[in-house]
Image (cartoon, rainbow, N blue to C red):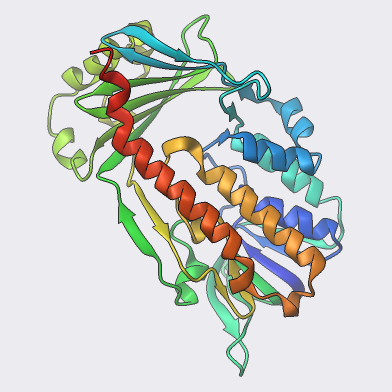
Length: 360
């Protein structure tokens, strides 16, 4: 099977889906590929900041997502030994300290809006196996597999929006600088206790950060930093003393924690690292989001940066012919912005413990 398209986007996460919608709206033939059978897979980096909110409002998407459900954070709180000692409130002009948006809600709106255009095609359960190149060395599409059948998609521009382990990036031979941050992260999700206010709560346990993020639909996401590479040894230790530290930090969680976190298997381990590539594309190929600049969870910049990449690239394509687009020059502004955000992440991680010094 062979197809022709102006744009082939690999990866139907928020960045890829937003870009597909914006380019389809501009009249371009767009094919969006997703290796999972379902687009609405679970995702943990679901917090919008002011920049992400502004992009969605710019394209008249925010209200439609809001109708499906989102939750605005009202406070950022710091706790020690079960006691609240510092509360930060949002600027009145902003009205929140971040917004939890379930990825299913975000992607539902983006995909449904894109489907309004006959020049948009979504192909799920489709895995990219290789990139196509012409005799001049320019990239001209992808070779993919769907239900065991090979598909050739010819395109003027191929875009890798396929995450931190990007196949497109690897097949294009684009190197990334990988930076470890000295910690890994344990995720868990539990129902919120009654009367739990929309908030982000922070604590310091064994000199490591513990975060609680209130989620829409009555849940709390726990993000617990542990020392890099320590999880295999940690799992050999008794579970109860470990989880008692969580309950000591936030006593109001005692019942829901005991009911829903019963073993190490109730946590999901995230190997934390950031990466950054000096090369954001090649002739006929571009990378966006985690494919070119993976963020750590600190500050919830990842989702918002992917949306900004998509918005920026769509704007550039609105003013240039696809074949005339200079990917390297186009990436210059975004590269500086992302480098700045990654420095902010490192600073936040290195200075987190100082938030507790005065109280102690």
